[in-house]
Amino acid sequence: MDVVNDTSDSAGMVGGLTPLSQDGGALAHLSQDGGALTHLRQDGTAQMVDVSEKAVTTREATATATVHSTAEVLALLGAGELPKGDALAVARVAGIMAAKKTPELIPLCHPLPISKVTVDFELGQDTVVVLATVKTRGVTGVEMEALTAASVAALSVYDMIKAVDKHAVISGIQVLAKSGGKSGDWALPASSGAPASSGAPGEGPRA
Image (tube, rainbow, N blue to C red; front, side, top):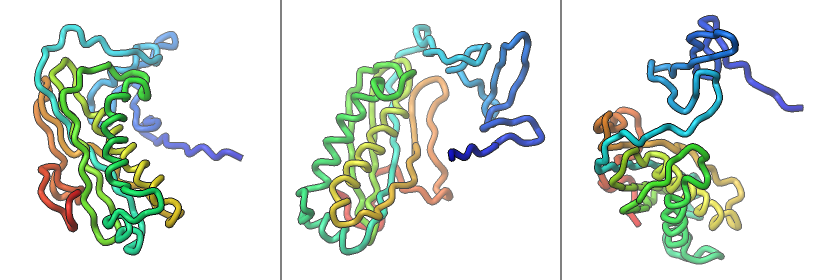
């Protein structure tokens, strides 16, 4: 039996959305921070946002994901001695390819002329932190491309290590920073505990 969690509360919020008005079936939504959900029309159906009037600017985003395994597996991974070979090299290419495929995977994303993708790894005692950065010069941001790159790179690491650790876990998929566009620059506060997006070394070597 499937179990559906009821996320509504007494304030009328459902799944993080606040109904504003309901007139003849029309429903508008705001996110919890008060910003309009632009991918929803007034009747609640999805749309691809019109970005034709937005200015072309240089835009960049960095996202992360973390693969949790064991110290023994991380030692094999770092030495390139996993049964499938060099996991990080494969995962890096997978992440770069994924960034370019984002509009094919996420239905309402705009195809963008991606100018640069980097995928790096920070090896801890029992973790692999993925850092993916995507850059473009266009009319909308590349947060989704960075998230997709980080996610698929982490999935590829999992695929490479599952023969020796079927209990590996992927967590912490999130945007760390973005720049460019009308909303300007943004970075996740250091107090969040997320990896730094500046490229500074973490707990272990960077690959």
